[in-house]
Image 1 (cartoon, rainbow, N blue to C red):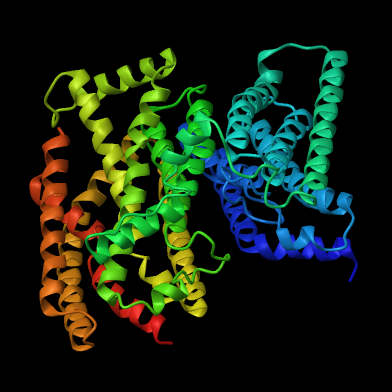
Image 2: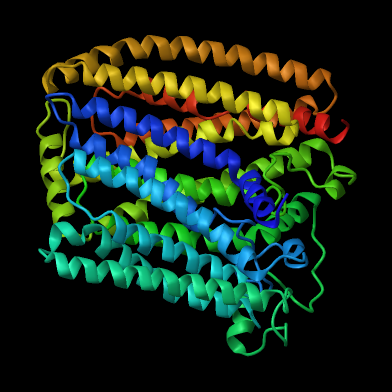
Amino acid sequence: MSDSLAIMRLTWLKNRFLLTFFVGIIGIAEALLFAISRQEARFDSFASVILCVAFLPAMSWGIFALDVSPLGKLDSCESGYSHWLLRMPIANWKLALIPIAMKTAWVFAVWFVVSKTLVWFGASTWILIPALIVAATGTLISALAWRPFRSGVFRIWMLCILAPVSYGLCLMAIGGKSEANLSSTAEHGLAIAAAAYFLLAVGIAYRAVTVARHHVTGMIPADASGWVAWLWNRLSWDRIGEQAAPHRSPVRALVWHDLHRSRAYRVNSFLFMACPAMLVASLFSWAPVALAIMSVMVMFFVGMVSAARSLEPETQPSMSTLPTYLSISPLSDTTIAWTRFTMIAGYLALFLSLSIVFYGVCMIGPENRENWSRWATWLASQDTVTGTATMVGLRVTLATLVFISLLLWGVSCSYVWVPMYGHRWVDVGVVVMSAVVVFALLFAGVRWIIVQPDWPTLTASLLLFLERLKMIGYVAVLVKLVLIVGTTVVVSRSHVASWASLLQVIAVWALITLAVGGGLFGLIPDSRFTLPVCLTFAVLVLPLPSVLVLPLALNRNRHR
């Protein structure tokens, strides 16, 4: 096998699961958009949400993550390129150009589908210019990740400068054709300029690989100096040259351990995923509900990246995430399992809470504020709603964000037992079964929306479904209570966790459930959402059986 094919195969093997996942998501999104476009009632807001939810993560992944090696600690002075490949007798141009070519091919393919979809819905956009600009942005991100520095602070600074410039260029390239009436000569000139910008980025990436082969662990001197580096060192929890203080309990030691090891991914996720997404979304006009969905989905995606890395930052794409030193440590299964679950749930909740900030940033635009004001006035005019338009709008907005966040948070946290169990076949089986269920529900829901002849009929059908959903919810609560009792008995008989610890977890869950249900009941101004309905939602969405089984799953992982 030649060097070029080997690098291509290595890049493919490292990214094949996410690549296949995003291809499937794009295919499903295109099918839904095609079905929507054939209906007489145009669900434009729904179509825009599908576009952003499906294509924005795929494009962002191509820019930031599709590489020969995953983006590591961007605040480190080391080269982010695979150190093993840099030691191989492979030409520099192959190491640099092959990953860039694969990233560029993905960006061009995704943007081609997006542009054709936009044209199908009546929008006007360029095809070549935005693709070149986005590909150049991804190439520069790779170049900065590959190049070693004297201090990781320099890389952070350069990325902070690159981010607004690149996103500004991308936005102008995407919306330039519809906003500016340029001649064909000017468009050709812009295409040539975009191609030159892309070639410049490729040259910078090639130079980064050349430098990285001689300074893999960082430029000399490797240790950072100066007050800025000292400040970054203090903020980053890396107490270089200092002795860590002893911890009062194993739980605090494990919490510090996970915080220390995953700190870089939290910082990188916030700076280079959440902040740019806020900037981009604030430039568009949104319907209030669509903006709420977009805000939570973006922050959920960022939070999942950060939460997953809290388990094992140095892990391979496999989901087995128990380090050997923790596996052989004297810490009990309950201590490791429930402490790490708390860390994951906390990370995800923190980023989901930032969806309120995301929503507020997008409300800076006058058009979005006007849309929200009209929506709030319409809500206040409903017979079952009491209060002024402003207060009703604020309460419903916050309740919508909390509702969607709790739903995603609960579903995600209920799957934590899968990586703690640590078996690959379980990972694949759970992912496949979950995907089948989700896509079946998605197709059924979209088909139900599309077949409705008009909006009043859709609203009436939805109200009837909600009435039936109450009884379904009550039955589901009884089923969950049976599962809680069964899980408690199984885990206690396995002698992994004591009855006292299991009852403590159940008591904490009950208190959180009451608080969440009461909070939702206080937020929602609609009289139809009674306290039993809100408590039923909280009971169903907050995971407990999957939390109780965590020590047992971890025990099987430690002793397999």
